[in-house]
Image 1 (cartoon, rainbow, N blue to C red):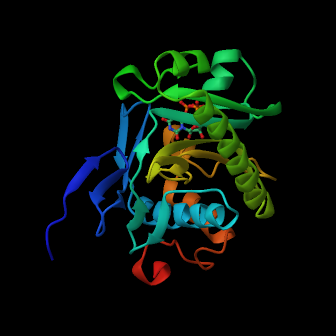
Image 2 (cartoon, protein in one colour):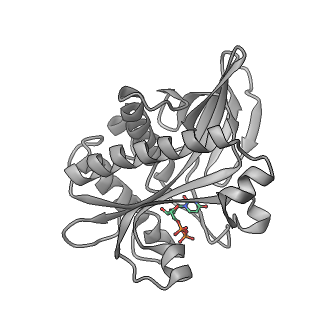
Image 3 (cartoon, rainbow, N blue to C red):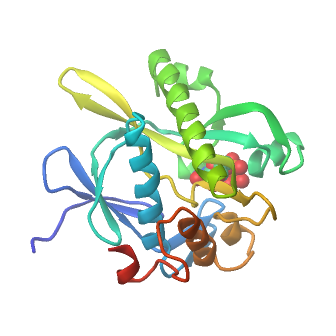
Amino acid sequence: MARRTKIYEGKAKILYEGPEPGTIVQYFKDDATAFNAEKKDVIDGKGVLNNRLSEFFMTGLNNIGVPTHFLRRLNMREQLCRSCEIIPLEVIVRNYAAGSLSKRLGIKEGTPLPRPIVEYCYKDDKLGDPLVSEEHIAAFGWASQQDMDDIVSLALRVNDFMSGVMMAVGIRLVDFKIEIGRVYEGDFQRLVVADEISPDSCRLWDLKTGQKLDKDVFRRDLGSLTDAYAEVARRLGIIPEGNNGTGPVAVN
Ligand code: UDP
């Protein structure tokens, strides 16, 4: 097989050129990082689970008319996506206080917010992805006013979809991060949900017990990360009961 061209290697994924123009292949690694990569580990099977979970969420979004870059899963660790130009923002939606919001504003973790709050961070690892306002985004030309309207609308639709899907399996969607890409179609550009949606980029708490089923398990040393992600995948029916979802039989 011809050696593929690597486009980019990030903390949790590698992007390769896709088989046709306008496509890319996303490869999910087992690497876990937190606190701007100050904490690092390799967690066996994490990439396989995130590939499946992201496929599940992105397919659901595509099916309800929320455009995403996802085309199809190729194998255990790879998915085919439309190539897009990533807007350099992390778009965060919060339903309950947690993490950096709790720290910044002194609000106890788990406090319900009066309405979903959308925040933006400028994607720059060297700067530690600082929080920015719409003023910064407009002034520095990262996105236009029209883009921002579309981004908020996409983010809130993703929030409604994800909250509903998770609630149905007894999980609270506390907050999450998405990235948005521009896809060019002739002279037009369209915004799509890009990157991944997985427990790496969401906070997911068991509705009854409050148990964390997301990357905070790694950030805060709360146990096995793959057990937590496999629990989410099992509840969603992505992997069968009694299976940790990281083997070849479970995912093909
Ligand atoms: N998040 C992410 N990548 C980042 C920063 C945050 O996926 O680089 C997610 C994080 O998992 C959580 C939400 O965005 O679901 C809000 O994160 P927060 O701002 O509270 O940051 P943290 O506490 O993770 O530093």
